[in-house]
Length: 202
Image (cartoon, rainbow, N blue to C red; front, side, top):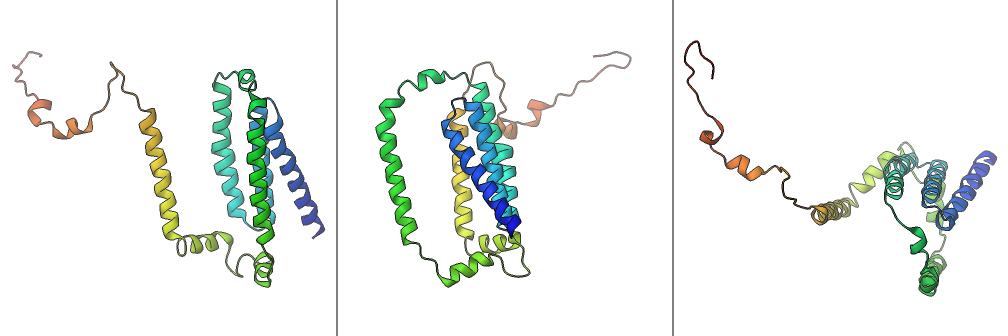
């Protein structure tokens, strides 16, 4: 228990410090690196809770895909961050107001949450005996929340199609595949038979 407590405090402190550094450092590349460090420490906290599946999901999806994508975008885009920071003070009151509203909402949620015996039992033993967390998540996700899971997939599909439509540009002189023309073409348009005399080439 002592080792687990020390590991928890180590992961939690590093996660909080690195999360604060994400929004305070000036260099955007350093900000993305601190974000990756935050994800790794959050994955460590998930491992301590017995949720190895969520830990691997956090590392593979967020660190391996999203954070690396952020890194490439930040490094490849030529953004003048000095000009972006010039209007920081003008947006500061709005930012403080939004932060205060979010803090009040979190305070209401935290104040309305009551620790009961059932919640204590769920925290003490989040996964039933003899069932690993992957099976537990799968049974819960594909039974009680199956329709919500499918709806989330449709939302992501719609977002992907929208991103493709918004970024698609038809340029002149670029050869593009036309599926309908390929399907509708006739044999005479694609096949030509030539009779070659004996002893001669084409």
